[in-house]
Length: 148
Image (cartoon, rainbow, N blue to C red; front, side):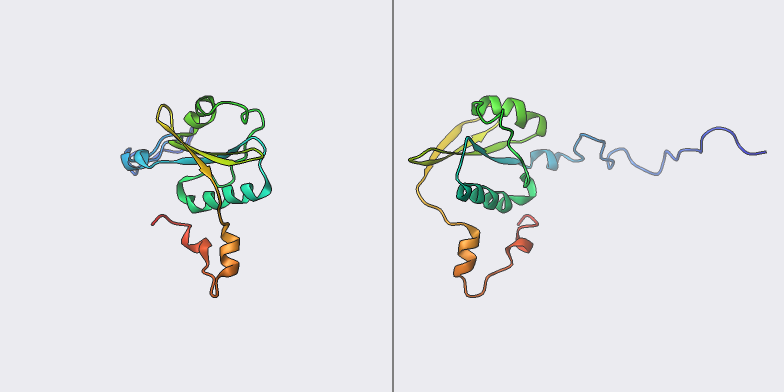
């Protein structure tokens, strides 16, 4: 006669410390790693969007590469943006680019209650322009996949 009920679950094969429970981090070292979010606020030129993508690739392991800004959140202040978006995702730093007719500015903020630094960007170079000028361009994609 076949057995009834469920198959026996092995309970002693995995230690509780090594398991990564959904929604939690495994070790204290992973909690301390700063995670960043690079966004644009308002409307920006396509060159600025390329600059944002270059910065996301540069800060790759702990930055959201394909983050899409929502149009409803673009009009919020940086503090409100932190409460709505960054705290649920566990983000520790925000880099926000904004542009008007005269200038491009960068705001660097520590979340949730840290200081906010504001910079004015006068000029910048994109990674694709630098690679065009090099005689022997380096494969940057393989270098940026892992942290230093």
